[in-house]
Length: 193
View 1 (cartoon, one colour):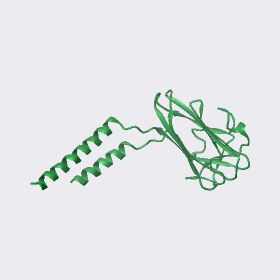
View 2 (tube, one colour):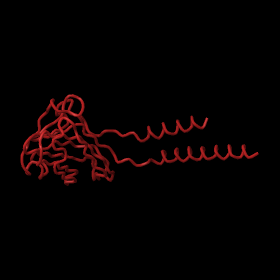
View 3 (cartoon, one colour):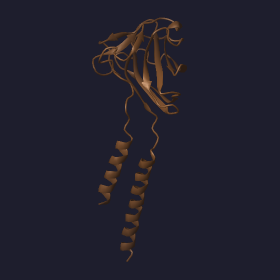
View 4 (cartoon, helix red, strand yellow):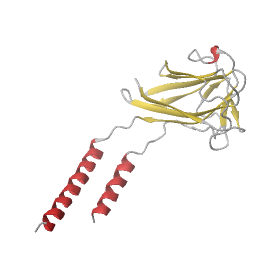
């Protein structure tokens, strides 16, 4: 009986914690629909999943240093002001250094990574950023890339609200723990008789 209660509790908790991707067309399977791109092109030869990715062969620091310029893909997300968000994506490179990825969130550069995935092609490396604050109901993110001697590939973007336990989830967990403790106490008191 107690095992069934624990399984039920875990099912409820895992369902309550499932994330929803805010990014539309995250793997470019519908081409560049929902995306803005500059000095990027669709690619089918090196992908993390599905059949498409985006690639750039932009050369130099001008590719990654300025919001709205250089080589980038961007999208506007529906966000909630004051909420933190997590962003992740996959990167692959078909050559050696120098290379660079920068990420702009809400108009500010939040990451600058040198040589994030040199010579990994066709494998990919995941890049994750957490606790990015939204200040309005829409937030623009831009991911820039440069791979001076070769190409850099981007795929499978994911963004969602930073997980925080909801009061209802905490209440359910508390009830489950209380019930579990109560059953243990009853079992001990019956054995002690």
